[in-house]
Length: 232
Image 1 (cartoon, rainbow, N blue to C red):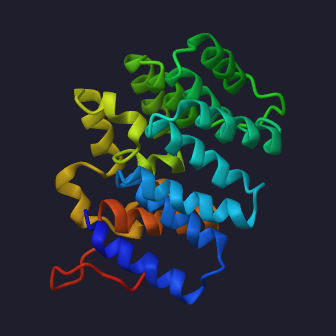
Image 2: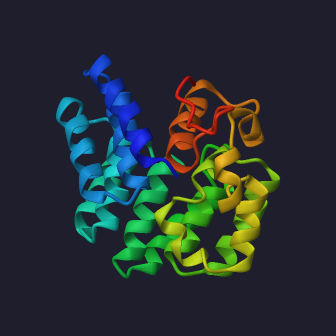
């Protein structure tokens, strides 16, 4: 992992475009996935000071609050995001996992049912369902759903190795197999390139941009001299 290199690149991006909410969000995501929860919250707060109704920032703020143990704040942010997005899956997951952390599995499972039967009939990535199962402590079910996500090449799997909610899964042999399948097993990270991430084939620009942040966070492509490449 090359967290320092990732931070340098993101800090440079902030210098070049200090008003970009997307860049501020990416910086918050970097801190979130590198385990620096308070710093992630600071970045999300900066975004929300500019745009209080930025749903994506509210969603990740909710996740960060949950990781920080501030469960009621997590629920408040997630509920606001759910209102703004009419209960779209990312907000539903943020709220369900906050309920699970609050010791309210009934509400979490009620929201989980909504993911299985979305009101607009749209496809819901299995990774969203896996996150809720993991938060509920349903390890086997979470792993089973992640296996399905691998079969479908779900783009969200780029975060598999660093997602905090997957920590309870990390000691299992199945999870190690999933990391291998996605290309995130420890020995493979140094060899990652954009081309290796076949799960992103056919996905949109925002997912590719997230992939670039991901590569710097969990495995930077190396040049011929074995040094981290910064020309992506």
